[in-house]
Length: 230
Ligand code: C5P
Image 1: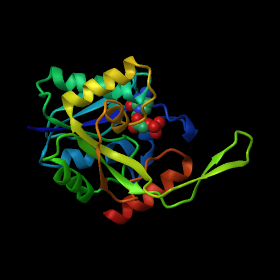
Image 2 (image 1 turned 90 degrees about the horizontal axis):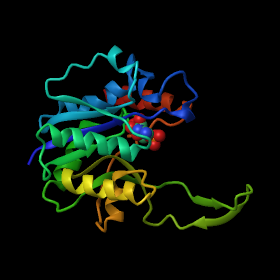
Image 3 (image 1 turned 45 degrees about the horizontal axis):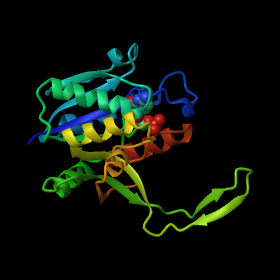
Image 4 (image 1 turned 180 degrees about the vertical axis):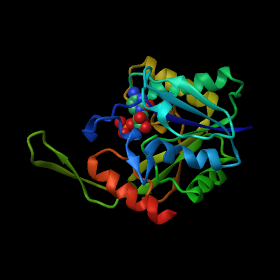
């Protein structure tokens, strides 16, 4: 079976308070999205990449992405799960098979290393379900009472931060996402949809440098990490 990458890049990035979505901000001279796609374009095991973009995205055409493999564009949806679902459908329509693997990676994660990508593929290729890159939580976690006070300290034992890529069989993931969407479930990552469908995805330890740009200060940190991995 083959390996495909899906990059949902149709978010608006409201929390960044920038003039454009965060995937189009500049990181070390190139758009964040170009940095995020690069590891998949360079990896010999990846057959092609499907990007989900906002329907009238004016920024993508300005990028300088040279792909030596198929680069497909899918329409983004209301939530991340819709965008990913559309990208899977575009892959299926262009000849990808249900049993092929798909690696879903946030457009806002520009610091994925080739080593972590290799480790994920290596760890899961013989797996029945698939799994995700993740990193153990370091901070103590608190739940608030809704009024600015601590209601509870959560037990962080065995708690992980879900990173991307998240790697699953195309057909199984499409079914899990479709059913989560149809059921109105809140799923913020692919593993969440798979769990809801009754599967137990694997955790593959990845670098905490693989951060998602969410707030303005994340861009500075990502630029530091990106430069130090070159
Ligand atoms: O907003 P958040 O950081 O969770 O977004 C994660 C990823 O999902 C980003 O790459 C964003 O562009 C993408 N996304 C999308 N379609 C949406 C919302 C988010 O492709 N409707």
